[in-house]
Image 1 (cartoon, rainbow, N blue to C red):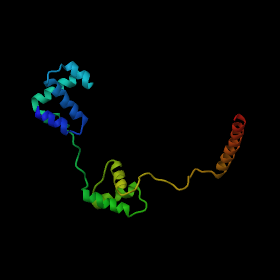
Image 2: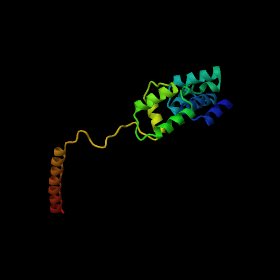
Image 3: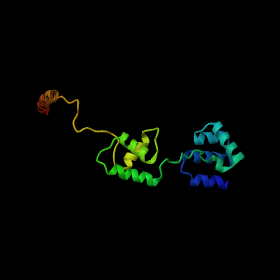
Image 4: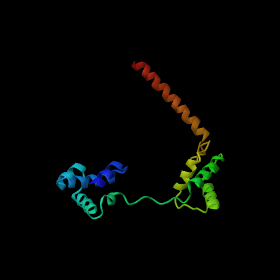
Length: 161
């Protein structure tokens, strides 16, 4: 029971706490139906985690997946962030090439490069100072239409009040 209480008090993950509370409620004599109703879980959930606890103890209720180790050390990530910070603009491809050339690391997902860019104080979203699709004639025409409609609306509002 001490292991269950330690898991409940020390865990940061709701799933671990729910498993431990389920088992703890069962050990305190509550019926599985009451546990299901209280925790909003299925009877299979209650019996599964009770069986795991009986067979392997409270430590088995903890999540098994802890993620993988990073390809780059914290110092390497810091060096890359400083390199990124020394540039005014960079593309994701430029960061990819730099990381691969200097550290021999090639990520499958672009998200890793986005994270590096963010650590260096940049965004991976490209922006343009001028809209390439902007047509000056259409802009002037739209402005005229908006002004015309605004004048009509303003007159209607004055008459209505």
